[in-house]
Amino acid sequence: MVAVLAACTQQVGPTGSLTITITGLEAGIDALVNVSGPNGYSRQLDVTNSVVVENLAIGEYVVDGAAMSFLSTTNVGFEVIDAPPVDVTVTSNASADAAVVYAYRGIDIIDPPNDESNTVPAEAKFVYDLVRLWTVVEGDDLLITFEHRADQTDLSQSVGELFIDADQDDATGEASMVDLYCTQPSLIGAEYTLYFDVAGIDAELVTYPTGDSVAAIERVDTGSTSTFAVPLPHIGGSGRVDIDLVVGNFDEPTDCLARGLVDFAPLPVVR
Image (cartoon, rainbow, N blue to C red; front, side, top):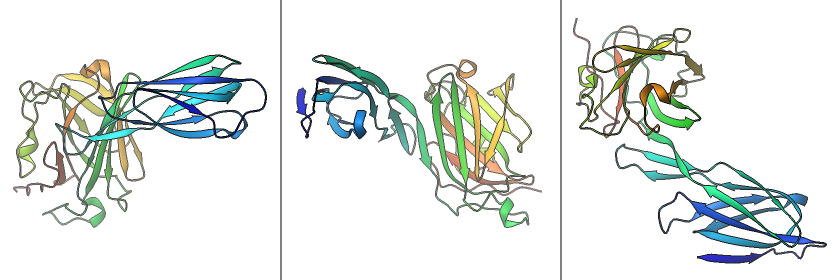
């Protein structure tokens, strides 16, 4: 489908046109595209495949496809796709082309708040409660971020294990050890584990279950979030992953998040 749109206000002086083409989306899905340009020009367009915007002032434009999220078929949560902005020059009496290319961006999983648990007496701030996990493919890195409850900004005892199914294939890899800590079994086939300690100490990425070291990964804490930049060459694939995660303090696990099961409790420590 090709639509032709004329600007709402007649431009003074020479004008040109802009052809916007969308790729990377499934058939029938519209993209919301933002177009900005000279003299404060700004417009939002719903585009299925392509659209021609006519009667544009000469100059530089930015065409930016808004990020979209879809229910994931392998995770509880969403898969996010987006497109990088495109810079394009509109010239007199000509049609400029802007190709908006959507691609996988990451996963976004919400964990119910206030489902943390502990059996060892501890200050409430150290009974860590997960509320969200998301990933972002950024260049050659997979950024993995998990968020504690908003009031938990002292992460001085937040430690745990993050199991990575690098190919989203349950039949490859090994079931993670999340069931050693949590009340439900693993539903992934993990190839890697990220063992993380407190801020200032690098996490260790190892193959799973053999435990062979792959790389040291810096932990970056900001507010109530912790982020790890895992180089894609270390885990292979495009960055589409499934994840099991358990967090806790120095004494015991306090919250769990896993593919398909985001609201199960940690197991008590046996002493």
